[in-house]
Image (cartoon, rainbow, N blue to C red; front, side):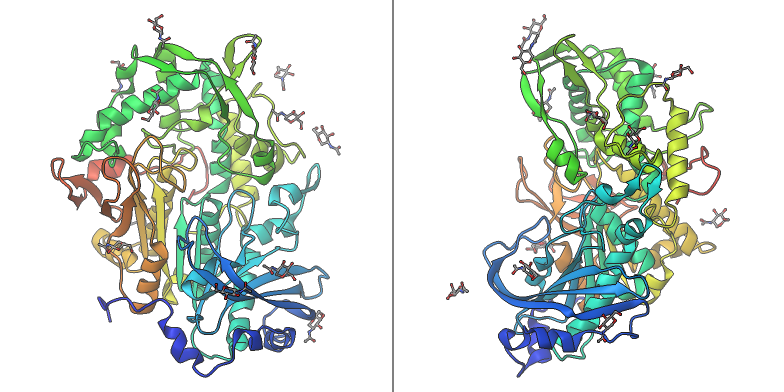
Length: 586
Ligand SMILES: *[C@@H]1O[C@H](CO)[C@@H](O)[C@H](O)[C@H]1NC(C)=O
Ligand SMILES: *[C@@H]1O[C@H](CO)[C@@H](O)[C@H](O)[C@H]1NC(C)=O
Ligand SMILES: *[C@@H]1O[C@H](CO)[C@@H](O)[C@H](O)[C@H]1NC(C)=O
Ligand SMILES: *[C@@H]1O[C@H](CO)[C@@H](O)[C@H](O)[C@H]1NC(C)=O
Ligand SMILES: *[C@@H]1O[C@H](CO)[C@@H](O)[C@H](O)[C@H]1NC(C)=O
Ligand SMILES: *[C@@H]1O[C@H](CO)[C@@H](O)[C@H](O)[C@H]1NC(C)=O
Ligand SMILES: *[C@@H]1O[C@H](CO)[C@@H](O)[C@H](O)[C@H]1NC(C)=O
Ligand SMILES: *[C@@H]1O[C@H](CO)[C@@H](O)[C@H](O)[C@H]1NC(C)=O
Ligand SMILES: *[C@@H]1O[C@H](CO)[C@@H](O)[C@H](O)[C@H]1NC(C)=O
Ligand SMILES: *[C@@H]1O[C@H](CO)[C@@H](O)[C@H](O)[C@H]1NC(C)=O
Ligand SMILES: *[C@@H]1O[C@H](CO)[C@@H](O)[C@H](O)[C@H]1NC(C)=O
Ligand SMILES: *[C@@H]1O[C@H](CO)[C@@H](O)[C@H](O)[C@H]1NC(C)=O
């Protein structure tokens, strides 16, 4: 089978549903009610037939960050149904979109959300001939974000919402959706089951691989916001560095340092194209001190603070702030801030607590705020980290941390430790043993923008290393690598930012991940590189077949081809231990 040309996406449908009914015939309340898994078949889940709704939707268009088809429209059956957990008296609403039977391709697709939101649109699977679904997770996730319901009141955690958001609601959406799909179409064919997401959607993807591994055939996880305790507190780290060093750089000064770093490190990968494809070589060979004294200038502007779309509430409260023209030369103080951020959090004993953004990543979390009255730049704690500390660590119903008085690096380490331990079996999402997923044939495609300024790309590398060492302990380096790459592949995206391209580096971005995954799962065509396209700049339109981790790209002097190479010195820059914590950090 391997190497066989890809079948048209919907080809399987013809055989599956030949002679079957029309969408209108199937899209009835009674067909759905009859198709519900009976009470007692899914342990702990009782579906409530009286809650079923079903209506046909015609000519719907679908577009999202993952599905590019915007011209095509789809007819589908919009179904909602509720269930309760046995004996609990709660109610969880599910919403599925069933494609027209002529387009149904024996697929089920779940999309991840972002920030504190689960996805709310079930139609994203339609371009793949897949049934898609979304869940309200029992806390009205269609209209509320999880951080809004996390606390009942100060000190009182809503654990039901926490476990549902962390992994349970999505897993239940899938275990209900698959038998419902088979019965809806009266088909007994295998249902190929996929999950795709980026940022918190990437964490959700990993949660499904870790907790519901046997349910999925293919999982695509982008820049996962996992290792939650460390990751969310880390959003306060850049501010803490400024607070500790008592220097609050104008944003233009930090951006200049980043731009000069990109310019200096761009050629180290063998091609000068505005993209640093080898941040490891940059880290090994570039000294940020060389930017001291370089002039910077930015015009006055109204800018919006970088919230990274982290939470619904924060998005709506994100206000634009005024920045005056900034004109100066890069100072030693600003370089010290940048270097300390890139070095990552250490406690006062000098022990490492966390990894950091790759050198060349923009320093968004370090953005300061201009005080109009004093004419100075001041601390601006990112709400991503600030809210996490007040709510999830301190358990106070506040949306931000108003200052860093008395806060030290050790305080950050304590916050990380508290959150890691408290959410170890819910949000932390770094279980490194994926045996159930792997042994049932699951495939995992994991990718991360190498210059991500929100979730460090090294965070993904560390998890990959954890899975490798936990699952293949005792096997040689080469054989563990071969065995792992058969089902779990990691790709770093040169120059890319958080779940997207980077305005400072016109690099490639993968655009056909689902097609690649479908080929891998259904046609046994295992990828060895990742198909990505450059969408701006001199090389716009160029296809780059990205290197699979741990191999790294090295261009042939300014040509249009590169090799995937391995060198231990580069690899070592991506390898971390975290002795500031007493327990293993996967
Ligand atoms: C399954 O259990 C739920 C909750 O107890 C109940 O509302 C529902 O009617 C049951 N379903 C069937 C088909 O009896
Ligand atoms: C859907 O589009 C087709 C083709 O344009 C058109 O004939 C049909 O009336 C549309 N249906 C609805 C319900 O809008
Ligand atoms: C799908 O069904 C739900 C429940 O009836 C309804 O609220 C929603 O508007 C429907 N969506 C579409 C696109 O028809
Ligand atoms: C950094 O580079 C970007 C993109 O080339 C440019 O738009 C921006 O003005 C530069 N920033 C500074 C401070 O020079
Ligand atoms: C970078 O250069 C500065 C100034 O020359 C020097 O003090 C520092 O040790 C260098 N850093 C590294 C990591 O080599
Ligand atoms: C920035 O300041 C320098 C030194 O004062 C001056 O020569 C230069 O014209 C200024 N640049 C802008 C764009 O204002
Ligand atoms: C404060 O900022 C506003 C623009 O938001 C500007 O109109 C005003 O002149 C500024 N005041 C001072 C003292 O700079
Ligand atoms: C929760 O704690 C915060 C911080 O101490 C306090 O400002 C707020 O009033 C408290 N809320 C309630 C409902 O007591
Ligand atoms: C931070 O939270 C406090 C308490 O909820 C609020 O009074 C304050 O306005 C908030 N500050 C910002 C910058 O959002
Ligand atoms: C910081 O610590 C000092 C000395 O222990 C104390 O007086 C002060 O109240 C603390 N400030 C805050 C905001 O906790
Ligand atoms: C295997 O496990 C041991 C003990 O936990 C650990 O020290 C070692 O590094 C692991 N081996 C690999 C290849 O990860
Ligand atoms: C990369 O994907 C594009 C879009 O699907 C396709 O046209 C191209 O042939 C692919 N390139 C390779 C080398 O697979």
